[in-house]
Image 1 (cartoon, rainbow, N blue to C red):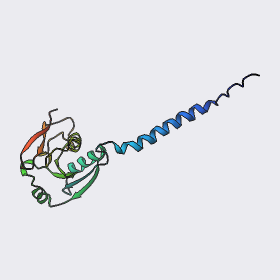
Image 2 (tube, rainbow, N blue to C red; image 1 turned 45 degrees about the vertical axis):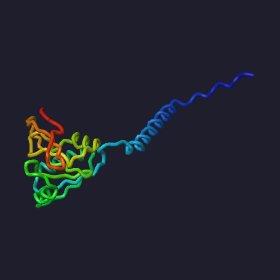
Image 3 (cartoon, rainbow, N blue to C red; image 1 turned 90 degrees about the vertical axis):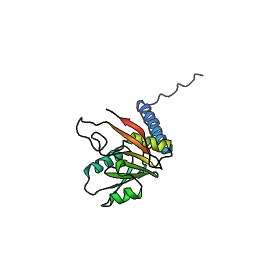
Length: 165
């Protein structure tokens, strides 16, 4: 008695199997991605002047980097800054709140993500003024050096991150 030969799979069966494996891997990644700690989808509320274009550019930059942004236009931005105890020498054109922290001015995403990951005992971070080349303040290849400062509860500051190029 001879052994029956194994049936060969049709040519396109391998293609369907590989597509199935890819589909399963994609499904698994969507299941586990939300469990990974990142800023993706992190809610941030930005308080800004109704007429400020660079604030809108910064909000778009945050959205492009995975944040869920709510923009609140207000004529009383200085009152908000006073209520949050942001001294005028640390202020900029907009104030944001994320996970209980203040983000003042054109702060880069990597500094925000670092703060959210490390959860330091600070009030927030700021880029005072409006340095050219900071996120939302792009002007071609021109860039001014600037520091991201940590704001401590007592109002003192420390360099959190430096940008020199």
